[in-house]
Length: 381
Ligand SMILES: Nc1ncnc2c1ncn2[C@@H]1O[C@H](COP(=O)(O)OP(=O)(O)OP(=O)(O)O)[C@@H](O)[C@H]1O
Ligand SMILES: [Mg+2]
Image (tube, rainbow, N blue to C red; front, side):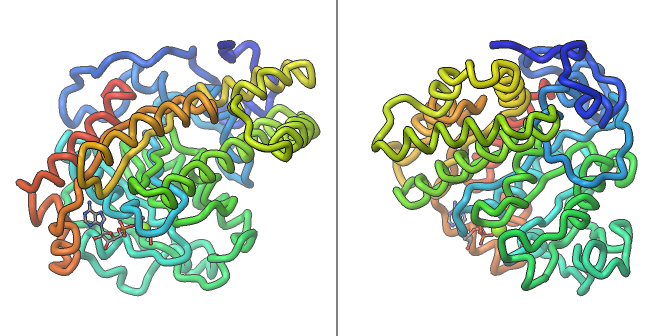
């Protein structure tokens, strides 16, 4: 697969957004970074600060004129398309493992329909949320940020705005502010890792926040509706990625042409060849755009998590999803692990305590730990 080297970056809109770019580098195995050392090691930063990753991120209005290597946090988003599949449970409990590894974490509750990440941490949002920052403009992010019971982990509580639940209703300027806060979280909040807890559905603002992460986790239950939604989520992400690559490389027509060709073949019935293969077959449309598209896919990771597994067969769904996400949709995906169904999930919620603190010995807590470790290992941490 072609890799996009800094010298072959399409134009200044790619390199200019973050200033200088670093050389690309393949993933290396888990490192032995001492706890608390932060994310400053050149090896880790070279995995985060990649032109391929930037190429697939949304071109939102942003005050970030330049971002130097060493300044980016590791960005992990948790999505999945369907409601109630465990996105928030996973988001909060990933943070628990990360802080134990010595990393500083900021969680953003980006579920604009029903923000409740604060409940998973057992904290009260004190009535101040993202709304006060990006809708009314009455507060700064620094004013609304909450300390969680985890030392080293803070939370930006989610916006409570009816309007934001609807497609296209999130003001791009508001998204730009969130984008800035996420990218600048190292200097603004001292964060090594940013966790974005996404809402259900495939609205553009949700998909954009999934794509701006270095690792986008797709959470699904081992049941047909949830798996279907997860695939719809990946398809929408691929469609949206084409738009971002088109915008960043100033090839606005190419995504439209490719999508029209894919939709035309879809309308003929079931296609055994996946989107990735069919897109490669369309190389003659615009070889440069297709090369950038695959570079942007290679510049980010998709993690698969199966939740509420009741038996081995349920757990095995993760491996199949990894394969399909990879072969059919073209994402560099990895099955990160499964979570067993366990009543401790709702018991801890009812106790208003973080699961990892309330039931540290539960198998579910250990599985959450394992998933968090695998996520970090992808980045050599
Ligand atoms: N492994 C599990 N075992 C038992 N119950 C679980 C498990 N994971 C999650 N739950 C329960 O499922 C419900 C939904 O979980 P959660 O809020 O994390 O989902 P979500 O994907 O964030 O939902 P939404 O899209 O509404 O934000 C909660 O009541 C939670 O306690
Ligand atoms: Mg949630």
